[in-house]
Length: 294
Image (cartoon, rainbow, N blue to C red):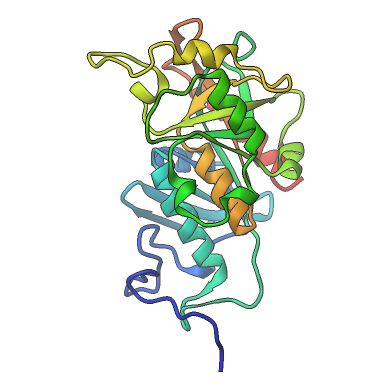
């Protein structure tokens, strides 16, 4: 008799059709290679490149298509906006791979997933103008998702975090930035000379948390200037987005390979914006699809 924990139905929620609660996927519908995007409509943009489609499932902001690309199986999954949504998606993808839905117990053999998130981002430096592709070698979490899980110390870069607190003169009460590296082997696999290796901030909002001011005053109006001046062992903070930190952190804790690569569509330093960025994101999609199985 197994001594493994049996996960109750309130924790691992399985729909009547045998699918996981939010994603509405069944275990057999998930490929080992996963292409993550924020926008559900972007799933179709990626999947139009597939040779064939095995399944097409939508639920709320979560849209998944699994199929074959150049004869190899891949899933493209939308996660919506924010690190909180990544918490849902990563836990459910891991459950599909590593929990037996019949016994509600962890499987004996671990199944490792490879996850590449492709998104859009705001550049923070002169070297990240609009149109640049930036991969997050480190993700800086301006969110709190990781702190709800045990063992975060083993995946965090504490000296990088200490430099952030000091150089940014951190003034946001109740929240401390955390830093997690992406999978280095995956970074090397995806990044050529056409993708800049950077250090990406994942903010827990689009406006105030990224230093945008409309009507409300900011807690630290100088934060973005301090971010742009930050230097840790020659590393600068290159761009803002809203998901990379919890993707890197939870994947590392779970044992999966993960990274984020973004197309810069806003120049936060230059104060400009490209709202017609479809061509640039299409080019990045092609690069990642070409290299995810290389």
